Structure formats: structure tokens, C-alpha cells
Amino acid sequence: MNTIWIVMPVLIMLMFMLGIGLTKSSFIELARKPLPVVAGLLGQLVFLPLIAFGVAVMMKLPPVYFMGLLLIALSPGGSSSNVFSKLAGGDVALSVTLTALSSIITLFTIPVCMSLVAWYVSDVYSSEIHLPAGKLLMQNIVLLFVPMFAGVLMRRYFEKSALAAERFLSKIAFPALMLLALLFFLQYPKEIYENFSSIGSSVVIMILAAMGAGALLSILIKSGKSVRRTIVIEVGMQNAAQAIAISTSPFIFNNGEMAIPAIIYALVMNIVLLSYVAIVKKNK
Image (cartoon, rainbow, N blue to C red; front, side, top):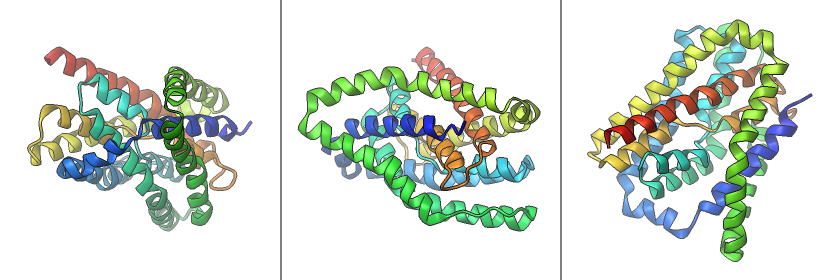
């Protein structure tokens, strides 16, 4: 069974929730706090992909997992990062702004960057990997932009219904993602078992290095604690569902194995960030 038919509704649901959370104030934040927004986007769109590339090379990941790890790094945080930012006492308005802007920007950067990664992997590993960039762009628009825009419209014209839908969807989003992870474990037990050590180590290094980069950026701009927590979370947390959708899509890679790094990432990411939230609350 191709899990794309499960991950697609999960991804659409997450992006619809993100759209509901967007208001005019989300973008006013860009004018009010340009430096934190720029720092967060720099961490998400530049630092994290470079970290992932360095980790993939250092760990000598096979081509399919090399591509999978970079896919995660190139996918924006999604609505879950807003929840973690709230739990950590971060700047939620900044979190929503960063998530929205990165989701829009990466509609176009993912096809370009993944084309470069595919070229590198094909050249270095002598592995033929073709990326239909046009189809990837169209899939991103359908699965990311359209549901997000639908959420914005629903919030604008049917606010009460939108907020009720958001409350309901927020309760089932995480269980749905975990169900997806379970199905992958059942579908690829041998591949996951044989590569768990290398992929798991790569994922942990990438997350911790990304969070460290986020902390460094926030220190450089001399931000307050709430802004720092948000930038750390936004740079460290990516949209695993999007990476899985691109990997398993019959229109793009149609490769379930390529999604394994994203599945392991989804599990490890929640453990690391919940630990971060616990440390922050303890220190408060």
C-alpha cells in the first residue's frame, strides 16, 4: 500500500490548521519585528539545509537516505511548531509568522534545492535520481498552499466554525502522524532496523545542531527569551509529513524508503522538543 494516500490527508489537515491560525497580525509581525523574522528564516532556509548536507556527507548516508534527510531540512515547520512555541513560553505570533512565510517561500525553494541535491547524489554516488521539479512545484501548491489558503478564507468568513475545526483537528493531528509512522515501521521493518543507527544518529545531530544554530542567531540579534525559544524551535522543527508526501508521491519519487528518515525524525523530534520544553519550564 502506498502511504501517500494516508499522508496526503494528514498534510492537508496540518496546512489547513496553519491557515486558520493566520490573521493580519501574523504578517504585521514582520514589520514590527523584522530582525527576529529574518533571523528565523535564515536559520530555517539556509542554516538547516547546510547542516543537513554536512551531516549526510559526514555520516556517509546511502543516496536514498541522503535525499530523505535533505528533504526534511528543506520542509518548513508546520503548525506543530506553533504548539511547541506556546508550550515553551515562546513568542507565538512570531512562530506563526515564521511558519507562514517559510511555508510560502519553500513552495519554490524545495524544487530548486532538491534538484541540486539530486544532481549531487547522482554525480557523487553514480546513482540515477531524477526529480520532476515542475510536478513537485504543482504538488506543493495543491497540498500546501491551497489548504492553507482555504483555512485563511474559512477564518475570515466563518470564524467560529474555523476555530471549532481547528480545536478538533489539533486533537487528531498528532495521533494521525504516529499512525503513519507505525504503518511505515510495519512496511519497512528490515530497512529501518538495518539503518536505524546511522539515520537515527544523523537525525539527532541535525536537530541539535539546528537548535544550536537557532540559539546562536537569536543571541546575535540580542533577542529576549521568548523570541529565542521560538527561533530555536522553528529552526529545529520541520514538517515530516511534507517530506513523506514528496518521497512517496507517485508523481515525484514514489519511494517509501526515502521517507524513512522523515519517519524517524518525526519520532525523535518530538522527544527532543518535549525535553527542551521541560528544561525551559524547569528553569522558569
